Length: 99
Image (cartoon, rainbow, N blue to C red):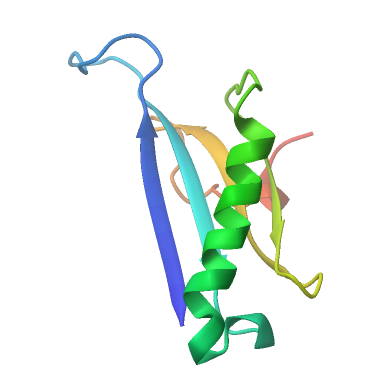
């Protein structure tokens, strides 16, 4: 099973003007590891998202920020990234970030 969640994070105002950049936080989690067995799926997804929320709560996120997400067994199962909607939407994987 694969879950892809997208959250829109607006940096400038509560509404989007035509031509205005929109910042997005993209979170992708692949749920096919042992940590996501049927009865554990929601518990593991919740654990990963809670840890992410704790790490970013007081951070000052900027475009290009992101990191990998790991399941309880230490397997890399996804990533998150802050992206500009006007940028190439195919570049949402931290591996594709420019140095």
